[in-house]
Image (cartoon, rainbow, N blue to C red; front, side, top):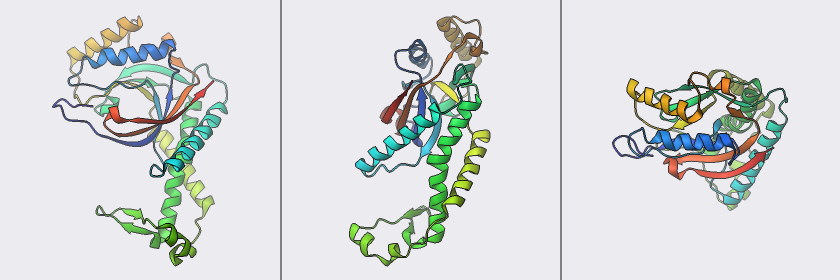
Length: 272
């Protein structure tokens, strides 16, 4: 992704879980075409990307060992699919698109708000708890109980030391490890995820990524006119009234590091 001066825009979202509309559906095609059309209104070469709602970022996963990565990807996607399918079926659409909006943040430069359906929020909270907050809480305990396993990097951040297989078998450091309190870690993770789901989770479907700020009035009018004409709606203030959204879809684990064009889909699962 390029900024206005032509430099690459680097991301640092880690492994994220996306909920996408199914490829080939009318809404998928509309959102994809809108992304391509609206990109031309922004300076530089704004990237193309698949329409999605980000459920959470910074999922804990081992990316060093390819075999372990594959196992963890399958485990996370399987658990996520089970959680999604287990939600109460008391909604017409899990994802309902609402008002067009913009923020300074490049990944929310131009986006459609998504209703905070209780089931969608609940799903995001569960995934955040299991695969972001719980690993963090367990790691924090381990650092406190077993400081011999960690060292400090050049930035002053505690990192786990690399031990050879022989060291792992013979080291007194590993044979005298203090066990973590899993129940406490789970309790703390649940509280962290609940707070995050209220204070930080803002479901949305991005239309354009850009560093342009602010969007002036003339450009804003052009954007709205283009969207309204393409979707055949009188206003961008509330797409909810026109039934735009989806249920089910596809869950994707995406490694969002580096340029947007370098993002890697680690795995996916269809939700029927």
